[in-house]
Image: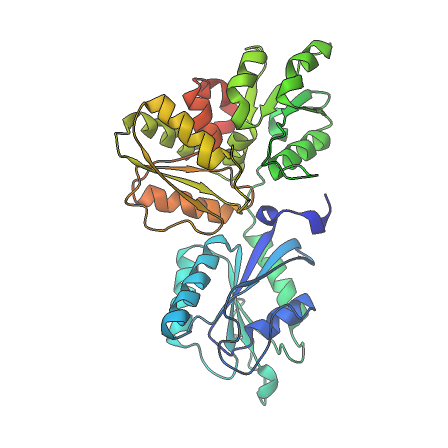
Length: 397
């Protein structure tokens, strides 16, 4: 998988924030060396977040996000500001762009306070220094002086961003490679249904294959309908079987108990840092009552099919398991609500199209409001009575 093919959820998210007319869009264009954002002297030219996937050295694959002015006004302006606040949820780095001709204003100081509160690494960029008679002495390591229009200080800013991420780098979490070793056989069960992406594999499948190859193990991919026959072909017992959660019940009957079994969705929960919370959250399924409201949320916005997992299969299986009359609501993409008080349970997809920051934000606000939070793979395994089988001790370390 090349840098240009790196999924959105795997890219470093860099958000550019600030008031109107401070040169955010000009700076984004200078950094990307593209006319990514429309530039104008008119306040509020950027009315919606503008996103661009690209490679930015020395960071590699990134998602650059240009946001509307944080001081936007009026009814529409307030809505734009709310969109800008949502961008902060997924940011790995926040770049606060301000006018170098003045001191920080109250809105900018408040924005920095929010960024600090969320623990987001940040840099303050003093733009328009070409309009100053003299560039001030460096104030602090968080402050960079640039001229977006003259492209001065851009390389210094890029280097500062790279250094920032090196300082804030987190321990690497692998998808599956720490469960396997060289020469192991790992079977990936990948059903092909009407909702499957044409001509490509979903990101968790790609992550698994890459980890298996990097470990020196052997990946074998098959549909669930060929799994039984495949197992008879192998002289060596597989070290692990990873399946799509939708066919957990079917695959569980085929794979012998002495062969470890889990799902892509469960591995995604671990990969995103959600596993312990989703395991605890699934217990709420047994405390529901008639009329309990469940939110089913997906990170992508794919076209719904007649056998869609989120809107059709899961509600059906949950009603059958509980025997209750339950109310379901759905969200997709960035539409996750911050007020979750009306829900009794939240069930999220694996979140492969969302980065870890966004998924952790969703989990944390659920925790803060006391709403149980689980995911597709965990709840399907639980309803089939195989959750213990699908969670290895190493996963919880």
